[in-house]
Structure formats: C-alpha cells, structure tokens
Amino acid sequence: MADRDRAVPGDVPGKPHSPRTQSSTLDFVPAGGAVWGIARHEFSMGSRSPVFWAALAVCGTLVFRECLPDGTTASLAAYRIDKWSAMILSFITLFWMASVASRDTWIHTEDILFAKPQTTEVLVLGRFLGNLGLMLAILVDEIIVGAFAHIAFAGTPPVVLAYYHAFWRGALPVFVMASVGYSFSLIFATPVAGMVAAVYYLAVLGGRDYISRIFNFSLTQNAPIFLPLAVALLAVSLIVYKRDRRTRCAPLSLSLVILAGAFLSVRSAVGIAGTSHDEPMFRNPMLEAMGSQSLQPDMRCPGFTLPNQKGRWTGLRDFPGDMFVIGLWSPEAPVSVQVLDTLKQIDEMFGNQGVRSIGICIGEEHSTARDFGSENGDRFPMLTDIGARASIDLQQSSPLAMAFGVAYLPKLVITDRQRIVRFITNSVASEAVIPQVEALVKGIPVQP
Image (cartoon, rainbow, N blue to C red; front, side, top):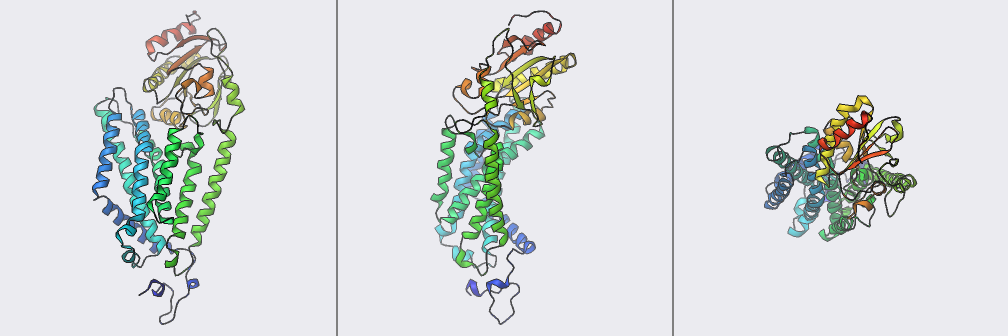
C-alpha cells in the first residue's frame, strides 16, 4: 500500500484522510517511544560494527598515551581528553554520521525503511540519536581510559568532577559535528555535503593564529552560538528530508525550533562579539589598555580586570593593601600547571596575613580556570585571560601576556603591599617562592 494511503490516527474507516485531519505537532507519547526504539536499534547495530570498534581503539590509545606522563593530574587528563575529542573524535563523528545518513541510498534499502509505519521525523531523529549515542560512548571510553592512565601510571588521585567536566566539554564538538554531518548529508542527498564541515573545522584549527575564536565550535564559550544552530539545522533536515513521503504538514514544533535556534545563535554571537577581545575581528579597549603596560622589577605591577571562577570581574584594586603572588599558567604548558599547587600553599600559609594568591590562565578555552579551580578546591581567585588565543608566539597570544612579558610559562610575580614588583621567576617549586613571600611579609627586602 502506498504511504499516502496508509491509515493514520483519526481517520474514519472507508473514507480518505486529508493531511489537515492530523495534528500539526507530533503525538509525543507514542512518537517518543518510537524514537527511542529506533535509537536503541541503531545503537545496537552500530555497536557491532568493526568500524566502531576500530574508532574506539584508536581514540582510547591516543588518550592513554596523553595521560601517561608523570604529574598528569585528573584535571590535566580531562583537558587532554577534550583536546583529542575536538581534534580526532569530532572528525570521526562527522564521517560516521554522514555515512549513516547516506546508508540506505548506498545499499538501496530506502523502500524497505520507509515501509515502516513511523513518520519521517521519527525515523530520522531516532537514527540520529542512536548514532550520536555511539559517538558519546567513545567519549566515555576515552574518559575511562584517561582516568585509568593517570591513576595507575602517573600516580595522581581520581577526581570525579574532572571527568564530569571532560564529558560535557567533549560532547560539544561531537554534537555539533554529528548534527552538521547528518543534516547536510540528508538535505543534499550525499555524504560529500557533510565534508564541508570538515573543511571549515580544519581551517579553524589550522589558522588559529589568524582566525578569531568565535568560529571555533569546540570552545565552551561559543556553545550559546553553535548548540542552538546545530539543533536548528537538525530540525531543518527533519522538515526537508523526504517531503514527498508526507501525508500531513510538517510539525509546527519543528518550525518553532528552527526559529528559536536561529534567534538564540545570532543573539549569542552579537553578545559575545560585543564583549570579547577576539583578534582580528573584535578588540576590547579595556584589554588593549592592559596590553600597553609593561612588567618591570621595582616598578608598579601591571593592572588587570578579568573574570574569576565565579564569573565576577576581579582585579588587583579589589584587594587594597594586600601583597600579591600572581601565577600565569596554561594547560598547554603542563609544567606550568604545577604553579597552582604553589599558589594554593601560599594561600593556606599566608592568606590570613594579607597575601593574595591569584592564578591567571592564558588559553583560548574560557572554562579551564573555572574547572581546574573547582576540581582542585582552590579558594584563591582563578582568573581567565579572555583576550588569549592560540598562537605560536606566546607573548603575542594576548594583551595580558604582552604586558607581563610572557616568553614561556609558568611565570610567577610577587609584589609588596604597594603593588611594586619585588620578585619574578619561572620556577614552579614552592621552595623557591615561599621564602621570598615570607621575607616580604616580615618587611625584609628580596632580590628580584
């Protein structure tokens, strides 16, 4: 029986039905059950594929090697897991989802598939969710392997919160790539269309010295732009794909999802562009003013105002009369992460004597400082350099790095209570720093 003649809920037996006799929205209870049924079937079928297990093995092996080195903490392991998810798993996801979208065309099983009683939206969405689940399963495997590596071989303790953060950070590029690869391949009826995203992402990753951060969908600060856009794109594919198979109008809810997604994406992009320092597209006058300063011994320390781990803008002027121990670090320079332990020790030893530890993360991922701070229970301000971007020349990577003359990380600066720079070092060893702090607390001069 042709699909247009199939009985639908609400039809009167013996009378032809009209597309307008059905509701303009999905019957969510039965449709939801059908979606999850198809998703489970797709997940089960995909999990038996040798290609899936090969991808699982490749991703797990890469993460295992990244998390082996001595000193790899749970936070650093989580960061490396997400880095590999953005660089490798996202491309695997793109190719996988593009092939899934084109599978029935390749093997000529479309007639069998669409003989099923489910609506096109249910079939397409169920397939997407089932295969997205497979890609997220690889991400979970990466987290488990990375945790095992750093616990068993690096000898550092587990931190459940770090693994939780790793999952949600890693899921962002996976979801965006899944939506783009699947939707483009459905809409244009060829997996080649999905490869447009691969070209785009390769350009973003390869040209980070020259391309603004706002185009990188793997960065969590850009999630308000790309998540609604990915959802809207998926909704477009649900409406456009196999329109000739429909016996009714497309669900109104999908049109609303498209409009809402597009609106939220554009609104977020405008908001981020208006407040960020994202060269070469956007320049923030406040951060440019920070970059015009210069760190010099026995001179006043460069000032700054940056968001802390709670989102509050924080600067040296918020702590009048305090001494400062400022540590600049980045997870891209693993040794520099150890400066956080030194800052924590100083905070515990001298915090009640007016000594203020401040950590500043120089990196293009804005969630790093917040996540590292919460995962390790750091109470001192952990600031994010919102002007930082990936660059071969670290000193040119942000206005703050330029102001502090950062040639390599870590960099640690100690000031007196008048904010005069008294000590500068690239050492992360607490025994090289704590005696200097102790001397300054007692009013004893130190050699810069």
